[in-house]
Image (cartoon, rainbow, N blue to C red; front, top):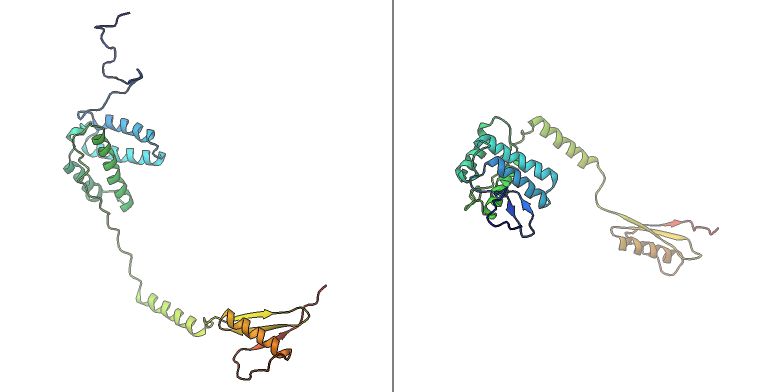
Length: 224
């Protein structure tokens, strides 16, 4: 059957190369609500997480609440977006945490950047929007008595606490001989003290009366 001259039943639908008809392309006259619907499908197709899709969609709906959800996307400029962000932080009457503010700026940049990249908008109105963090209130200063109490506790711990200078204690043994134990300021010094103790005990070397390393005899372990 010759279809020449036959009118399309759905002229607004876009026919792809495979013949499949898809949703109509957006134009700059499309409403914010219509663009949001296509944007949500785009995020899902791109593998955005469910939480990100929901959060970004909520942020764009909030923009629609401020500007009017039927506002054509082509009429939204940078000043509209900066005024919207000012409304969020200073006029809405609802706290806007730094994290929420940063996410909403990101949502605007992703949304309008997508509209620009797909050719719906000739310019990206969010490009000039600066990502600024909302200052959080400073924590309260501790009371003077709390500071003095903390310092007193630290002084008591320094005065009565253990010496933090390390001391190593190592035992060495040989088959048929009693083990010997040595102490020192380092592992190597403790090993040397233990070995010297064993050699002195067995009469291999003479005892050094001036040695600072203490050596103790340890009963030999009997084999079962």
